[in-house]
Image (tube, rainbow, N blue to C red; front, side):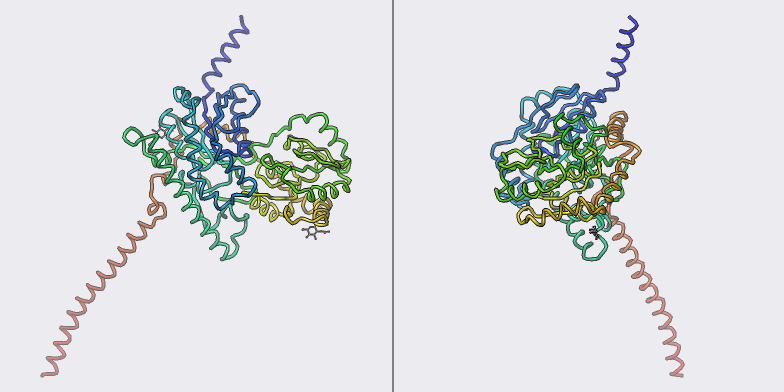
Length: 512
Ligand SMILES: *[C@@H]1O[C@H](CO)[C@@H](O)[C@H](O)[C@H]1NC(C)=O
Ligand SMILES: *[C@@H]1O[C@H](CO)[C@@H](O)[C@H](O)[C@H]1NC(C)=O
């Protein structure tokens, strides 16, 4: 009896604090979903009821965590595949993406699952990725606050809607590694990159507004601008300890590292034993979830195996094709628990394609990286960690045996790199709250305070001229010019009169 009363009160308490949270992430990026799922599962563990729409549901059953697959049209699937292999350039993708992103989100809306949940109640909607702003209209539908989760670093896409300062003069654009604003030319480049962003987002906005007005016609709904300026919270995959120091509003919360488990999961037994036995240290090799090792040339694979076979270290590889002569110190697996492996004490080096996720995990655990970027933002990520001094980079297309061997040796034996990354690792872990805790805290905060309108920055209600004070400057300039003109006029007429009278006096004197 007593126990059931305790249980009952527990359930009631749980009910009163548990919220219903909806994640809308229709853009197809598997690696980005790692961050989304890190947050969604953490919220579910905390007792909230979470619903996630994305093209990549977790194939794991988790309490309180419901997932729906959002579709990707076959032609888009093909396009993304081509982008992954480099057949479609980044530049071209950049131009195609706005329309595609909106299409993907629209396709999600018209699924039966989505139409069904429209009748449910939600306490918060979290959207993210690019070309998804128009989904903010569902905030009005569900009468709940909205938040954004940016799986990328700070960008205009998340900064502009909430009025977070862009500070183009001192905050480097994501295109450039941090600390690159020391000379004038870099500042010019940074400025141009900032302008490029603004134009690109204006382009995306055009398609988003069309979609918004189709789904939420202005006769019955808030305007697109109103929905967009009413975002309660922005969670950003960034952290100042990495060198991107910038001013942030209270509603902009940095959560970089959220996918890293503070306590690693147990490794599969064979991997655990393999790593435990690596007395000389271990190396992890992975070119990411999207890349298929079958695309690598035979020559490259042969050369790679030759170099690895000469190492004293054990090497564990994410590899999805066959290897003819696998060296003895190498273990291959189709899938690896990367994060848990990087947490192993014998880990010495990570040979990686430089996806954002892997970099964060490596940094968190203090493991140096040899970067082999393939496409997308990997090149930028790689440049950045090389300039931070704990990584080296090689070109996958031109790499030679000597280069690979020397670079691996340098990273293993020159302590400059490992000392640097260990320092980062310490700073990373020294925070008042873990990234997970702070993301959950602020989400609950916003729900508790009904959207937390008191956190909203007034700038969201201002236009470009007002935000930059250019209207005030123009007004003051007009005032100054007008007063000068007035003064000039007054002096002229006054002096003119004086002069005239003097003149007449002198004239009259002369004529005397
Ligand atoms: C802004 O969002 C809050 C909920 O977070 C809502 O109550 C309010 O009506 C919204 N205002 C506008 C103008 O959209
Ligand atoms: C170790 O690496 C640093 C940074 O690249 C370099 O300056 C230094 O000369 C290297 N030390 C040795 C012993 O090679």
